[in-house]
Image (cartoon, rainbow, N blue to C red; front, side):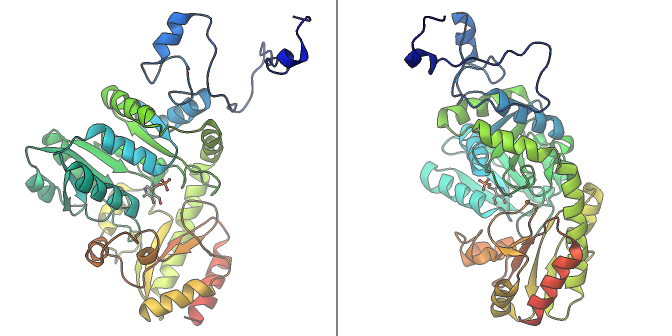
Amino acid sequence: MSELRPETRTVHLPQPPLEGSRPITVPLYQTSGFVFDDPAVFADGMNRPDGPFVYGRLSNPTVRSLEEAVAGLEGGVGAVATGSGMGAINSVLLGLLRPGDHVIAQKALYGGTAGALNDLVARFGVEVSYVPEDDPAALRAAVRPSTKLVYLETIANPVTQVADLPGMCAAAREAGLVSVVDNTFASPILCRPIEHGADIVVHSTTKYLGGHTDVLGGIAVFASDELHRKVWKYATGLGATADPFAAWLTLRGIQTLPLRMERHCANAHELALRLDAHPAVAAVHWPGLPSHPSHALAAKLLPGFGGVFSFDLVGGRAAGERFMSAVRLALLAPSLGGVETLILHPATTSHKSLTAEELARHGIGEGTVRVAVGIEHVEDLWADFEQALSRS
Ligand SMILES: Cc1ncc(COP(=O)(O)O)c(C=O)c1O
């Protein structure tokens, strides 16, 4: 092809010859589409999530590597990676529900999910009943002929109630309902909901899976091929699927997930114990503490209690605001699951779309402070918390 002109050569770049060796890490396939030798293979890839790679919105090798990695960790048959956690949650809800369907959700939910359910009610005539996360009898009593789906969170945000996954998923299955579990707070290192009977697991991979506060992403993992195909079709049609660079960063984060989870949990344990004993603190909400309502269930279900807790100060909202202004090492910022310790005020940030009644349903107080504990040295974190407590 030596006769090609510069205008053509600059467009058609040489591909690296991969013969006899291959990259150690998963390569970043930053391409929006793929080239085919055979038109029949091209056509085949359009129709299924595990087919040949055709077009980036449908599939991409880096994204599929992430999907297979998380499906493997969760014990699912397949996964759909999305642009954010909300992309995964909305793809599942919109992909599986129709107007008039009924959903049973646990009372304490991530604010974005609570908002998405409210939106389904207002715009699509979906009905939602709320039950406690650990009450299979209440779930059974809430089932209607139109009920299609049960929505749970392994560890709820921010008051860290733990769902009775075996009991709730069994009750859902008995009634022929699809159970969906948001496993973001536990990560597959602490819990694999499919082993407890869940049909779909969703994550904000922005959090522990990514782990470095530098990438947004989400994923839905499926226990059956049928659900996988349905949600893949919806998510690709909606345009919610993941970008390869985001998938690549998330894969890189996943390689240290078990190590990070161990440190997140150990640091949270130490800080929760010390805060619980501090005279300025009214209550600490962390399932590792025997005083937490979910403690017995969490001890049975989880090998660690997670890296997020929340607490209320004796001085209420004003003291909480003073604490958040006084910390220096912990950062006042949204999100969780990264290497840095982040704090926020749920009532005015992550859960600000909720009414006062909904906040109470979630167990969120006016002055509740949420802490997403990072992997710093715990004594440095405690020194920061102690100096902030002395000013609040
Ligand atoms: C439990 C949980 N689920 C879902 C989400 C939404 O994820 P994303 O922000 O990646 O859309 C969040 C975000 O904070 C979350 O905490």
